[in-house]
Image (cartoon, rainbow, N blue to C red; front, top):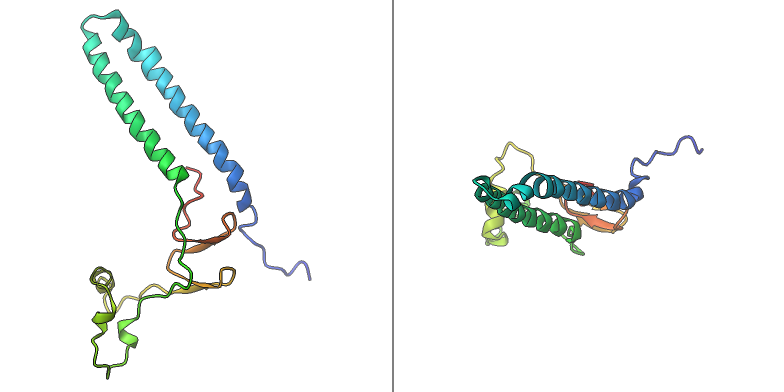
Length: 164
């Protein structure tokens, strides 16, 4: 029956690509408007006219341009950088509680020191994150990993198509 099919809440995710381009233009327009307001309208004329406020205007204009460069560099690095994906045949770290007790090798020998520190942060009463499986990629997935319908691969934190 058609009415009994499970609704896919992500069926409109392919529209995020178009919305993403619009958001990039929106951010560019906001930056251009703020540049016009701060430099052209507010502090540029004070710098040109001279007087006591020209030194302050010079400092504010330099600071504004420095912050603008940082803002644009950060924004375009976020927009253009690959979000990362799960490596093929990814497997979780061996769980120390499930290792054979009779083994002559200590469980900590299997785990890198930096990973051991993270695993040690969980107390024995807390539940460790579950590892799930992606049926589309045919691969295990770490926690917070989801299959992206736009990229057609598993993405590590699934926040890469956030329009902001």
